[in-house]
Length: 128
Image 1 (cartoon, helix red, strand yellow):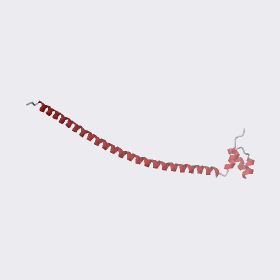
Image 2 (cartoon, helix red, strand yellow; image 1 turned 180 degrees about the horizontal axis):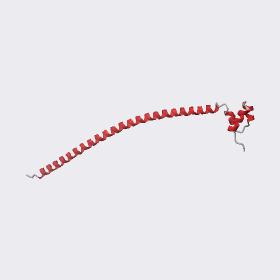
Image 3 (cartoon, one colour; image 1 turned 90 degrees about the horizontal axis):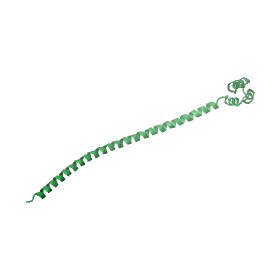
Image 4 (tube, helix red, strand yellow; image 1 turned 90 degrees about the vertical axis):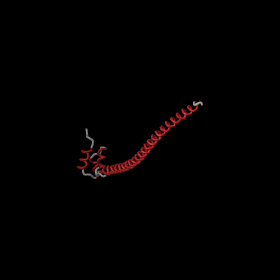
């Protein structure tokens, strides 16, 4: 009897079994790698959601601070405007800076001559 075909079939079966074993081992390794990568992706997704939530909170806080800053700046402008326009001599000082004489201040604003002279000496342009 000729045993060669049986040996060839046996060798081919052994080769197929070894290939199948190697494929199963590679499959298990790939499955482990896939599970590790899926877990890493899930952690990264959770981290990203946390970062997004934190960014939203920071954005809200920044927006609130910007609102407060705008309110403060508006209040400062209002106070500065009120301060300059509520000074009793504000308009008279502007006239002095424009070159008005003490007599004009007395006539226009009802100041005494000594007040007018004082304003001219403090805010007037130096004479040459």
